[in-house]
Figure 1 (spheres, one colour):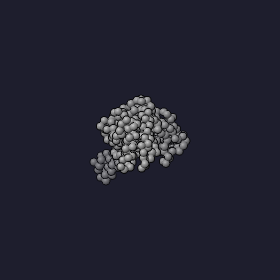
Figure 2 (cartoon, helix red, strand yellow):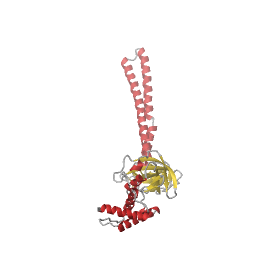
Figure 3 (cartoon, rainbow, N blue to C red):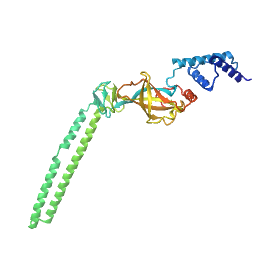
Figure 4 (cartoon, rainbow, N blue to C red):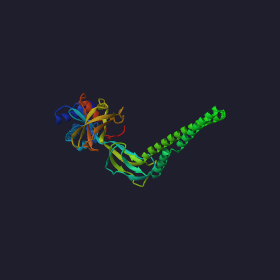
Length: 355
């Protein structure tokens, strides 16, 4: 009888003496998983005896007991937890969007129009850049648009040229005006009409320039890109905002919360983007109906997990950002052995870690 056979027999006998039943494959997998988590130093050498098996089995029993009592020694924030009907995967809620709002133009920050912690609407001004010099340029452009002198002068020349042509035509009938004079007068009408057209086109150009400056003037008012809450201002009034450091304030969207889960690949297969799924907030032990918005197209080869993004509607602000959540995945269609195997394959990872 070889050493491996003796080792297995001794370990099985120790397990039976403690539990009253034989060890199956599920017990082996579960024991490996739990012993691996706490890095328990058990060495099984060639002279493994019944006493050694007894000690190892006692350790496994104690670890299983600690797990059943939710011992913090075995707590793993992101490893799947098996229930009767669902598998629980943990993550943390966070704002759906967190934007570092930047200025579109360089200049001196004139004023912060709001304060940190204030809710803002999309398009609302949160800060202003000094625009006094630019406002003068806008005023000049407006006056150009309003000026009508060139157009009126061209129109007056056109009327005068038309009157002269009419007189020359009457004189030509009386043989008192030459055809050359009449021809030159008619050319003067065309030239006057062309000056009218040029004056109108110039006015259109002035109008376009004025509208362009008006659009650029909007850049001096830094606006919120979405509904949210001002987290902080990073610039004070009087500070320079340049192209290399345009960040003015940070805004977080809290009407919707996002939770990123790292789901073991075998459990992620039935999930579909756009599907509704339950997320439990552990602090209040309440379920929130949420929607899957993103599923990574492939699993991480190192962790064998798939990144899944879930959005929770938080219009009432009932849920807090930064709290622990659990994604409840139905375990229907999976055996307990498959669940344990998925749990063994899933290492300790950080929520939201990039794949």
